[in-house]
Length: 241
Ligand code: FPP
Image (cartoon, rainbow, N blue to C red):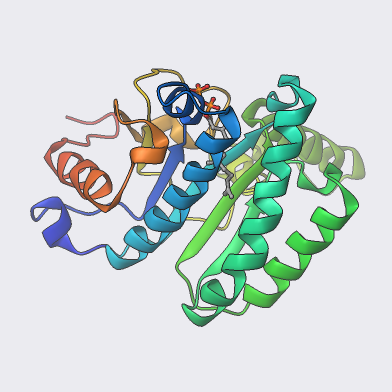
């Protein structure tokens, strides 16, 4: 559980999601190629996942590659996949020794076969860990996730195992990829953009949204601690008074 000190005494967030934006602009400002920004972005991933653990956040969900990111130039997609391979290879031992459970959401089974095998191996090696949980969204799109959940429920209705009248919000939530994770408390987007970009749309229903100007490669322990502090000052009413 996140320490109450981190939020100034308020109930701390159990589940934090981050849209990691601004790698390209970070590189451009330094007259560097975009890949340099993504490399620094991976350093930020390392830093922030450690910081999240230290702050007691139970689940950190990171948007690493959206189902729309295939529209980027082939070379950039290749570079991002390369960084992901490198991240998995270099980080796995630490995740295992720290007791972190790795989860991947999205249509990741359609990535390159070697990457799929690496991801399967990493998930299996960390599956019995007690947590915290690091969730990486890969080839993820929230609308596709919601459509897949609707299809699952429709198939159960067709099989006769589900009564349409039994479909409610809880049942729908059960059919999503995130069904076994705590509710999303805080969604952060870096780099000043104010969009959800098809990330965790269902799960964000009651999440606090935070748009931070910092570019992702500059995001660090202090930025995360500041976000938690601000979260602690927000009044969450979940539709009540
Ligand atoms: C957005 O910056 C960032 C991405 C599309 C990719 C995020 C990926 C990483 C941080 C590295 C890989 C992740 C892991 C978990 C190893 P942008 O390129 O859209 O920036 P811009 O808007 O400034 O161009």
